[in-house]
Amino acid sequence: MPLPFLTADRALDEDGPAAAAAPLPYEDPGRRRRPYRPGPWRVGGAALLLLLASYVLFSAMIIAFAGSVPAAGICVAAAVLVILGAVRLVRTGVWMDEEGLRLTGLLSATTVRWPEVAAIRTVQQPVRWLGLPRSVQGQAVLVERAGGGAPTVALTDHSADFLGRPEAFRMAADAIEGWADRYR
Image 1 (cartoon, rainbow, N blue to C red):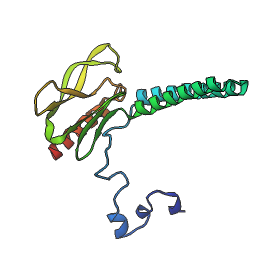
Image 2: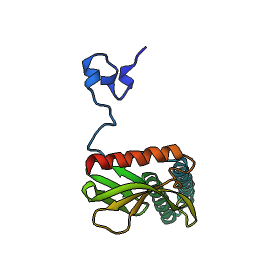
Image 3: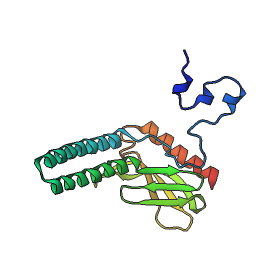
Image 4: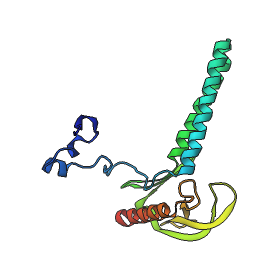
């Protein structure tokens, strides 16, 4: 029993030429997208931050019922900051579109236009384990700029997205190199 009114892409539920010609919802060429899914370490860290935010919001409610509204406001502000940190943690990584490559960190973001990219390559080098100061031997995707300078590390196989997922790292590295070849 098909229920087309429940699907987001109703054009794909129908048969015929209209369904074959309809673009898929994720094929918007002008939209920035990530060439990989966020890893379990990144999602787990964000989930723990959201759990912490729920406890802080619950404590704000208890403090507000106790009669100290300014202290409850401080707790709500702290919870909002923790929630924003969790969202930013999930959004960190490499994003690509037709314009270029966007390297998003926790506190900063850098956009490298495709004409500025001289080469993208995967190399063996010491990489940071889960972003911590400890270094281990691993693979990294380096972005070399046309103007020279030190290459920028885009991805590592020991990051929160790829730790324990070597196939996902290879697929993401291939996707980034493919986009660079296509749009450079």
